[in-house]
Length: 350
Image (spheres, helix red, strand yellow):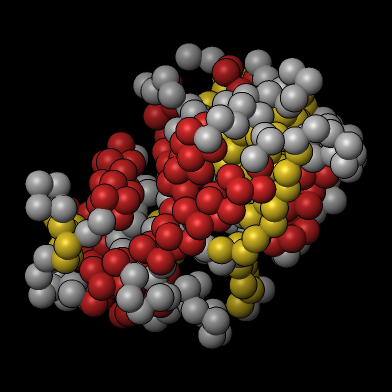
């Protein structure tokens, strides 16, 4: 039975198994750390640089800038303005907002809309975007809302730097891609400032720069979705992102059944394709974020078909029937840990 995992517990599990990447040794030269709360999640940073404190301040400011642009709860954000003008006309957008929406549409097209930034009205109907009671929507409600999730009804004018939602009551929510985009922005900022060694977690979205100062790769734990105190294995990475999505992260129970927050916009219901979690490893944080959701919605067979036709990401899947499935590139940097769990490990090749 799945356990509900608080944000901080899951985050601490990931960071606790980094094999020394966030060490308690305060004598390490030029080591700087920061914890903040933004985009509705806890974010943690460790970098090595003589001007690390000032650089981390800049990183936090960048994240807060993006949050002010992308948030669906801040009334004056550009996404809120776009949603407010649904069915009425175009809205001028900043470069960042335009880029992230374009990436959202791009990943949506790649995954046949398994990733859908326009699924917001249905997610809201389930109660996952509010602090109110979560519940199963009426069938009539879902039938009314499903036509509002077509990404073709989100038009972008790159030349004019604007976008519009063609149907009234449509809405965009960047929750499945915003932290990935922010991760890319933070890596770019840190590298511009000369950081060559760093690790950060944006609510569990892990990003790395280079290796540890001593030259060893960063070690990242892949959480066991069935047990908050367990992990299924360790990745050794550098200069890439590790982003996981799963139905165990946010959910509610009704009439003895569990309903999670990852909605399939084709059905209006939580995705139910045999997966507990999907972890993406990629040098593209935005894509990794979107794909972790999309492949979870698609299910293992379709997800692997997409991977076999791609060359810019690797993946680790944990299935409901007790398997840990790693693509060949992920397997080359992954150590499976059976430990106290009963998962079976397998790899797939192209």
